[in-house]
Image (tube, rainbow, N blue to C red):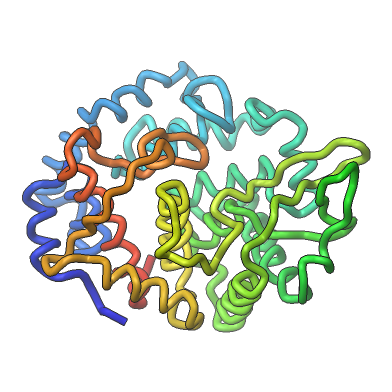
Length: 345
């Protein structure tokens, strides 16, 4: 596997990218301390970013962002945006939001309703797991409620190992596929939570998760499967989780966004080198980079540019020029290659 981007790309992004990308390259890839004069200056620029300013305007008196928990213009999306933009963990808005998220668990129904509780109870990752993943985005995992969800996430991947075919886990109800009773299954929040935490990473657990990913590859592509509670059908959080082994040459723009999102999580998870199919996908990404290390494939979809609980990847202010899009996608490629080669997440 190619060990890193061409060094020219690193240098050029540090010169031409938006403050968020420049900050995160220095922090995540180069390991520079946030206390340096350069990083302090970049942090000030990040706080003037229009989207960051917008999210900060969502703040309520008690620290909650917006009104909802799950959905657009609410707590989950707001914290995700601030973290992706590179806002430092100790910024008052982020600290107060996390405090409110811990203090008011009754608000977890906002935007998701009782479905979130049912999905948690059935092992598909609902409101409680979403909350844990949101804390993990901000680098927090020393909470008892979060540790409990980490083990739920591990159980989700472990459950995959007992599945040889899709028929093992589905029934048909009113003409739709539904998970059988007592089946657990990993969703995007299982993957995100494990990708952004470290306390679970024993050799045994990492081997089990890698085996779970290999089994998901074998079962791919997965159809849409609902969770049934009595006569109610609910959609689990399966965004990006249908096809772990796509034909990259045939992917449309929406599938490319899901691939970038999923592959970044898998790279952070530390399983790439243990799964040949994922190695081949990362190598295909490296081959797509031009001689200077840039990702030049023209992609455009609202999944990239519209931020919410699931979609959103654009850190540049806009993609009105091909250069802005190229910078964003090159940065995502850089992160995947960086973490895929064994760097600590």
